[in-house]
Length: 110
Image 1 (cartoon, rainbow, N blue to C red):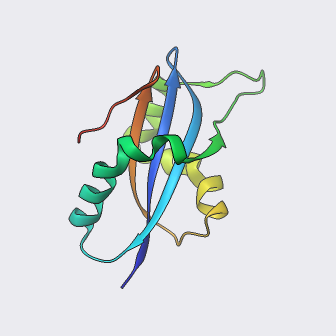
Image 2 (cartoon, rainbow, N blue to C red; image 1 turned 90 degrees about the horizontal axis):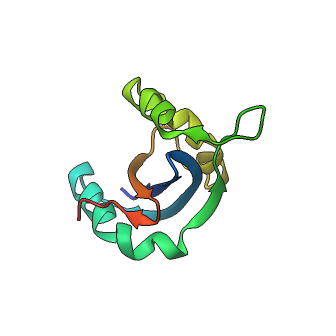
C-alpha cells in the first residue's frame, strides 16, 4: 500500500532554525526501505524542496536550535511540522526523515 513519506529539512543558520523545507514522495514497502530512500535523496532534493516558515517568538526571533533539540528529545518536534502536514494533506503520524542543513551544509547520513 502506498504511503506519503517526507524529507523535511531543518535549515539552521547562526544556531537558529530559520526555515523548513520539504519534499514528499508516495511509495510502498517497509519503513526501513522508505527511510533509506529518503536519505538517498536528501542532498539531491534540497534545492527543489518547498519552503515553509520556521517559528518565531513574539519578538520575531527564530527558535534557537537547542530549543528544537529539547523538543525533539521529548518527541514533540512534530508540533512544529503541523503546517507542513496539513498543507500536504498527509495522514496522521507520517513517516519522515529530518535532515539538518547547518549554515548551508546538508548534513545527510548518505
